[in-house]
Length: 438
Image (cartoon, rainbow, N blue to C red; front, top):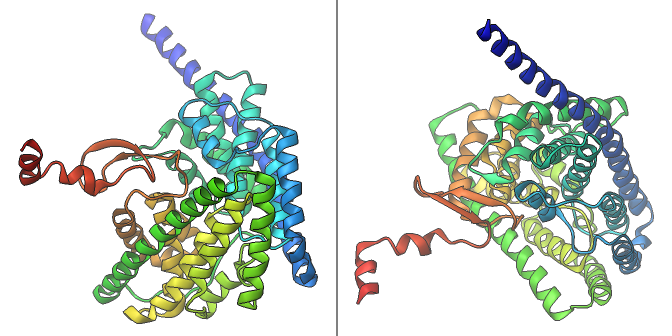
């Protein structure tokens, strides 16, 4: 009889937990689906309006002042994706006002020609929605952290139409080397719900058509070489972002002045380049690189520069779509040099640089499957594995932690951009240890 009672209690416990998370995930997914779709439409509208009215570029400094003012008025100055990660790591509370602030800031940035993406806004808005929903459900601290992950996955899924990649990315980007298995069903349910809402509202998922070569040893080797080259590009991208952000904050501590000067810098760069290819997200350039195999050789470097200045100045958006742009244009140019078709090289470069910048090889592989189809699974998985190992401990998000060494089976638990494996490895060499003792 006692055994039956224990079994009944266990069934009730697990069933109640499942029901609780399905309900929260559904609510979170619906909210993220509607707001994410509105955000997607808003950014698309801003991009189209800027295309038909090029003079809006000159309004970028003014848009920056509006962004700084709104962030100060709502009390969320300085908050961003790292705060979302900290909400999962240490239970940091999230202000509701981060949601309208990043929504408005990103749309204004795209409207007036700042170089930024959408996923930073997606993670911030989604994480904020998940946190606020968990408060409505009166959840404890640990469950609130899972709810934040649900919101991140749902909003990412609504924007890009990649529910599987969004789920795995949200769960694994926080602490690289671990997978929060208990968060899988809540996050996947939220991602599927938001994806369904976005489709119903007419948001087209991001997809590319690319010719995948047959799996041959020579082509696998060429993909590995291209991924190794992308590791350098990814490291340059991350380091330039952080360097420019640090230097602008140091030399221009006043946020009002910084955003105005940064805005005029983007305007000047645009005029010098004679093209608006590097303003906004640059999805047209990404599509041309992947589907048509065309890209300018200097495009990836210019996109790094434009994005670094835009985000360091205080404009809003994200770094993932710029990483798509940088990887696709570099891969399009470098692919033929190692013997790969330009379009396929662009696809490999896109996924590789994303992986190197986020340190998420499994999520990147799923992303490739959803963006390009399953025919290139072995190629994309190989590329993600190579770049993950060779890109070092650089990353877009300084609050992200990497739990295990990329070079050996060793627990390190370090933050990205704050650890260099070669330094700690050298200390373990016998000859170096002897010299240190001397």
